[in-house]
Length: 344
Image 1 (tube, helix red, strand yellow):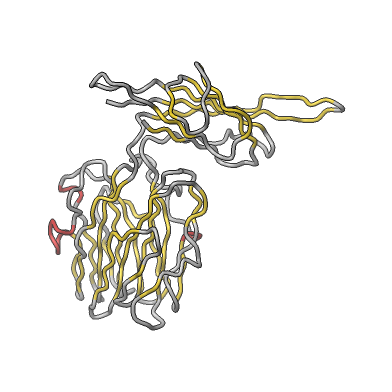
Image 2 (cartoon, rainbow, N blue to C red):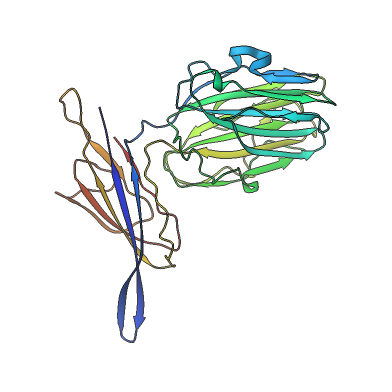
């Protein structure tokens, strides 16, 4: 069995000129811990779409067990999209354990929701979303992902920010943007369309579901995903994913990213200022293998980085495979988030 424990200590040092000499001062520090390195994020399966044209519930009460993604397991993250085509309906959301991370009504009779839950693989995973009073078309669909950090599953703090969302009433499906700090994040694009039109995703993206539903008031909901290999800005208002058919239907694209389990992340020390030098010390216990064979631990240093990276015992290069016990790295920053990733 592989197990990794990582501790990161971050210190900010101020280089302040005093006359002809530079004075170095200790400023602040932070510390963080991680457990075993995770295997990476994978898409499990989507469940069946659930829809109706009248008052009542969608989700497992209507569609049964088929609404839940096949093969889901405890610890998976379940993401559910809901689209209502009646703004006057009285809405009742899902029960305990489900968290709403986005809702918006950018146009009349175009009301959307995004929920998530950490799966327990029990009846508690069931999802129900109902409408009453004045009712029309309502639809929901769920997907499952594995290998996501169960404590802090998203790159955003609590709810999807407006900067991640793009609304249009013509052309293609676009999104806002999101900056990721994990090199192995899973970026997801959720699509909501005010007609039964499907999405053609861009190169390198995979489809979880894309449901174009011919109802009393037509609608479309879709979810696509892409595993990242580098941090940075994801999504774009020029994403330009084609929609089937034609027309000036309202559409919303949302981009957000899932964080991998087993990743070490630590905040920049609170007192850090631009041009401080940050020194990071990473200590870990080498992994073990129950079969008795050798095993290795890979540590990927964050970027940008200045100065050498060394290890005790021996020397290593960035992103090399090693069995060292400590790594020191120096970064010069301008209030940039500090981050590191370990895998085993």
